[in-house]
Image (cartoon, rainbow, N blue to C red; front, side, top):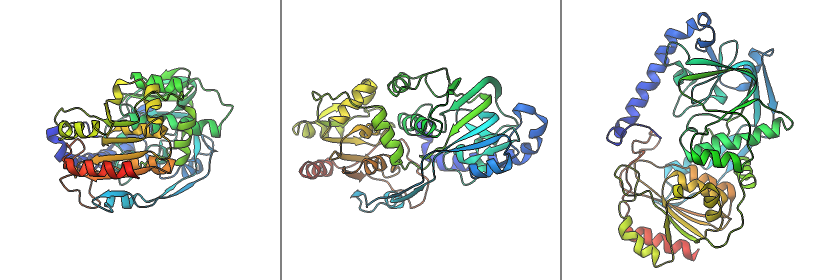
Length: 401
């Protein structure tokens, strides 16, 4: 999600293009100087695939294979308007084979976790960022040199990438789930430190529940980690496809306690603060849902284990789009989900989780506004305006499914 204030969100696509252009121009100017600045020198070039990184620097870079590639084929998402292009575009995805990249004398840059080899190569496959057309647009090139370097002795495991510092969805699928790849590729490996976001309460809870322990280093925008030996698992959720391998690992590693005393019909509220992706007609909708046995919750007020238990016991979940819906990861096949979007921002990440689990009844409703096909969304935090009667009718259809 963009960090721009809500009034500036409509300008996000333009500002993003400017950001990408500045990265290209700054890189052209400062990349040639990388060899003169030591640890803080920018990468001088990049590879598109980690296999190419290994070929360029075989003495410093090794690829440890894990699981096989995945081809994800999905049926059409059901909702209004039918066959929305965002969901249609996401019906097929190819996820490369999983691996861990080992970089001796490697650097890990910023809170987006860019991987840089001792020869000054950016491994773009493990360093992806939001909305880029090529590695030359990567924000690692925005400044004349890398952030301040912190040397860490021994073996360092990276679980950080774009979006993982402050977002529940990205933390689970782009940080924590990659620990499973590390275990798969190097089952007996011991590390001296793990670069992973851990300052939020939910992050610490998830790491503990997943059994991820050790010395944690907080990724920061103003820091470059230079390790004797850097281990970077591949990033299979780069395109929000929720690979089955990641979903299954999370479900197994963070199980429900088996509670059955929690509500089974949930409405997830985002509050009523303007510009927070709220559902505008929530006050009118709630009494109708309550008559059907729904309980309104804010997942952020529950512990992580409580969220897991509540969603594992749920029969139906209704919500405006938000990271709280990531908790359907722990729901059973047969769960019914209704996700509501503003017309200016449609996101397939929660539908792909439902598809990865299988057997779920997912529906979407897209409100007023428009998102032209193939265009970057402008309304990342826009409020959601969908007629209450349509929401109520869709809920009844789901309850009968």
